[in-house]
Amino acid sequence: MFLRTLLGSQLQSKLCYSMKNNRSLRPTVRIGKDSFHLSINVNNYNKDEIRVKAHPEYVVIEGKQEKETEQGYALRQFIRKFKLPEGCIPSQITCRLSPDGTLKIEVPRTYKDAATPAEVFNVPICYGSFVTDKEEIDAKKCDDETKNTTNCTGFAKVKCKPRKPKSPPDGDE
Image (cartoon, rainbow, N blue to C red; front, top):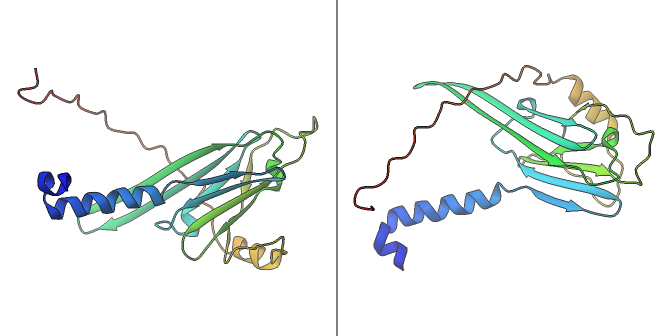
């Protein structure tokens, strides 16, 4: 009620819509005894615009989208980094992108072995419905899809423009 009188009904509905959308962008992280699950909404990106890398201690999800619009050139890019819990095996990570744009990552967990290699792995992203209850993944379909797509290896660093300092509002001294 207070927001409606202060902002007006149109602005209030836009603000509420924006807040609801921001909640849906939060990733879902589940840490289990045998695995680590990560789920993130990337529905604005195609499969070939997303790249997942598995490091020994964390997973990096990158997305880059370039579009030519009537107003000019549009670039949208994100990088999310998630720390893996103790005992994860980054070389056995699986990654699936659903048709509705949800990227699900699963990393098996065991007791950490001293022989775990400290390498960075590029993880192929399979497209399709998710596997439940330990069903086998159609590996042939996944391999065929990853062969026919190009990985986004040319992610350029984007320099941010420096922010102007905010001036104090008038009358708040």
